[in-house]
Amino acid sequence: MKPATHRDKGEQAEQLACHYLQARGLRLTQRNYHCRLGEIDLIMEDRESLVFIEVRYRRKGRFGDAIDSITPAKQARLIAAAQHYLQRTGGAQNKPCRFDVVGITSEKGADNIMWLRDAFRVES
Image (cartoon, rainbow, N blue to C red; front, side, top):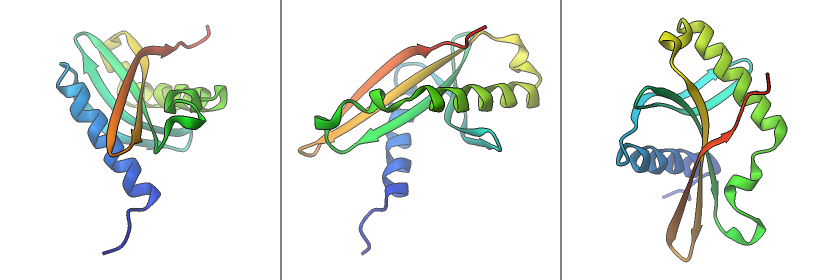
């Protein structure tokens, strides 16, 4: 059996994050939305809001939390991809939108999940 690749671990982290958020009432709309501007790991609905979610995984927390790895450049790519998604889907019925980050740190066989709602905003 081959060891898990970085991509495999990322997919497992996204699956874990999706289940975690669904258990808290969010509904999955789309997974792994890709466009030329970027990628969004999860798109979910939280009551009346559309939520664009970035999932970050780190094996150990000694180099900072997974959430700390969301740079301004990454935020810009997420915003651009979200705008593309909204244009493609007709504005998602004019729902309010937000950007959340789920950070998963795995250490000593245990996963620590941190959900940061409204992690960053679009500058107008």
